[in-house]
Length: 445
Image 1 (spheres, rainbow, N blue to C red):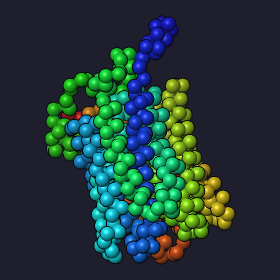
Image 2: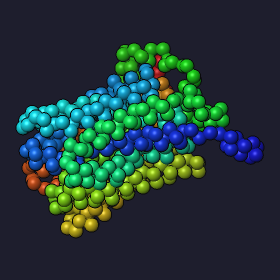
Image 3: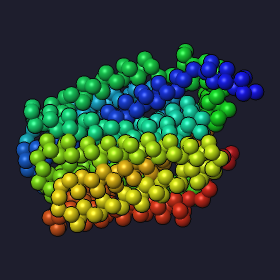
Image 4: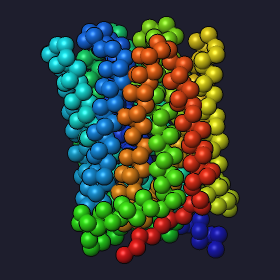
């Protein structure tokens, strides 16, 4: 029996890891493009006379569109598949990123309105990305590998900050903020070509053998047979709304969706105001802030990978899926509350250290996409992921605006850090009180 199993493992291809690497790279650019404004924001505020409240609304413009487009993008993914929808998504978000570099053609209020509109358009274009990631992981990975796979692509947000924040800060310092948008837009067009060349579903990928397909399917992967279409009625609007009602009426999923909102308050603080916090509250130059921001990002990446590995290790050791997913989430979010300590220290190295510890905890607890892949109905992974992302990215609307008003009213980031830390505690409440045992749900016909 053991010899047979060893032979099977030896003969099994591992194409799924190449697919995971590809979505990690794309997600890194996805987050880097979102974060361009946080790096160039100081220079743009000076050039266009943007105040703190206006900046908060501009930061939020991406998320208004991103949230509104989630359900349509989930339907598109379930209807047309991740390969085509994701390719279109990458192309258009790269185009709108590139166009942001031309904002200086107009001046004053027109420049602010143009920037808001382009960030809004980019939000629509990026909407399918994370539901597509969740759908791809659900189809390419068995349950025992799904936590690590989801943590890996989710950790791309930290890789983006660690690699691209210093790079974009250097470009801004050396050549001006417009070159950031030019470089990121062109890189995105290259990604489209790579994606179309390399991505296929498991059953249609030419390099996947039968042993890997069996391993994925027997382990709980939602493989769709070659040439199979969506179940009858899945493409209809009435059926889609009925599915959404069922998903939202499930206590477990609703708790997971609310928890993702609270986790993403931390994410959007880091993506929007954090570099400006380092410049305005801590007196760093934009170049210093770019490199300082990379330290919490690296720790967030390490925490994200550790969370996935620990969670999957607990599954393999026989712990329930509920315990294996909740322990890293709850522990990590409790650790994230230490960021409030930045209000009580003066040394910049202590500020960066506390933020690094907080984002290590945030990474450790960022297993929401694994939970969605574990629990969503196979025929509605796209819609469930879209709802999850809709709730989560509502934080992208609320967080920058709230912080903008706090900063405008008090002239201090202290209240902002308390607001972010409180949402970490609310995540713990969601997973301990609202979310019961984790299990895959089935849709009622």
